Length: 466
Image (cartoon, rainbow, N blue to C red):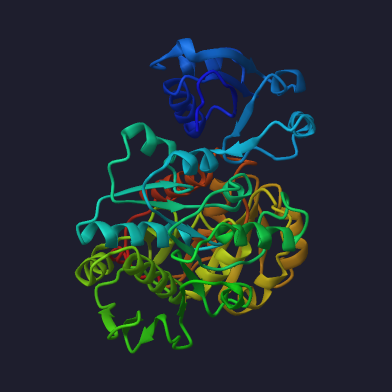
């Protein structure tokens, strides 16, 4: 694809947008940028750009149709709403509208292993990547996991494989994306504030396989009622992972370990050194091992990855123990399905801190676990009223104005042996920059709380929430 001389509009100047600007400049495009932040802030971000001469036009503080209609191609940063009025105008003029993933896919010459799903994709992607690297493969890890894929193009494409976490938003704007190995972990209701119903969200996730060819491997969760049946309509190799069944071709739990069956003798791997807690992480390990093996990981690399992987920040991350009460940061649990998996991993009574910006879902599926696992509930953010209406009658519940207030109240409800868990079931953007910011505030508040109280006992081990 030749970008030279094309007027290319980048919408959103975050980390991905800046990488796109640099790549487009190197390819001779005439770069336009539109962002809702003030113009002076955008100019400061662009000041260190290596080729400012490629920048033709800059729009700050707004998005206007007049500006968008100057473009030959529009590239959206992740999270930019697809229903912006200027985008509707651009569609009327038949101006192509892509995301970063689409541009990446047109220039990337390296095979891609892609992981998507509502929950578990960050952990699975990172674990799969570690398995490949532990066996001597060189990889670039990027996508929704926090590193723009465009960076790989800028670095010269020198890895054996690209390992990418892919969101539904990215799939929506990548019509020609085709991974050589694609993993679909699960589908539960999420982002219904963006999609016209659950079926539209399901179709978005299924888009991972829209361009699949005969030689491409599909990895599906046999236990998921929406994912498992997809394999029946696919040509080419399909592999399943399951916690409860034994697929003929795929991965499953065998005793205290994992077994892979890939048209050859079964391969067994031990979980004795696997540090991540909960049955859902065993499911993530099944998917990662299967995807890594299909992508060329060695058995030694898979076992080493299982033994050495320590998890991902803000996903059931142990923070501290104060007077026998353990605190866990699950700020990345931004939907109901993630909270369900988090609560299922605990046997101790839980004081749950939840809430944030509502994503259009239903909190009723949490009711059975609230009744059986949770002794008190602290609610924060814009969704606290809706959550209190659906969950507040089940256990003692406290709406809180700040996360700090919720942490202090939760600790007061706890007794030795209890767990205080931040697992919001909501996005963070009403009160925080992102889920990482929310998690850091939680952790800092817990540490400050610990500093005000004389320590008793020892900290719980990082890997054990049960």
